[in-house]
Image (cartoon, rainbow, N blue to C red; front, side, top):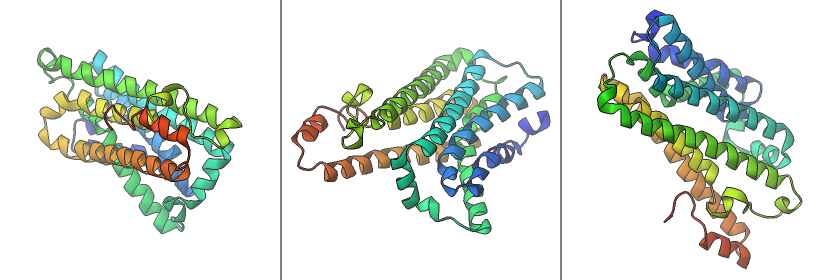
Length: 268
């Protein structure tokens, strides 16, 4: 494992580390984009941590927080999504109509699992590049960049966790069965969970930038992964707004809530 971390096989190895988590899709195709997604990030962080220890290199405090953020985010998300999938009837109905639910058959499922695990590995790769190049990063020059990235990463972890729980609790009430969530963080932002997701991934990427500067080619997979997830989250927010606008088109209270909130950030 020590040799892998410092070699060109590092990213393929990270892909292999993510694969078992996404392979839960063999049990339920939906898991490739839900439970398997979160778990793959936790697996990627665990792989990076153990590869770093095996290499014998000194683990910096910043790298430890970088990797820990990925593990906490992934483990929390996987646990939450699994619990929601077995307790929230509305989610079960949505899952039946999700595009990924149609991925049936061993060959088709295997292709989906391979592609998703590769994508999640690219998204998680800034942690890997940080570990791979931790001893050559100019901390004096780029310490502020790393700190900014770590702050965004951890704020994203906490924000998404709080938003997910608030919405879950709201949907479990009688009021939540027929109404949009406008409690807690949702009083000011219509999609704080998506905002937390974006902050986490942007932060994870920014914290790895100084390490990636030592090997510019590493920007390619990391940037592709980041662009994908940011595009996915912003598109999901727009779809959510459109769906709710159609559902509550004649509700004056809903219109008032929309006017007093932002979709993701102030101004949108």
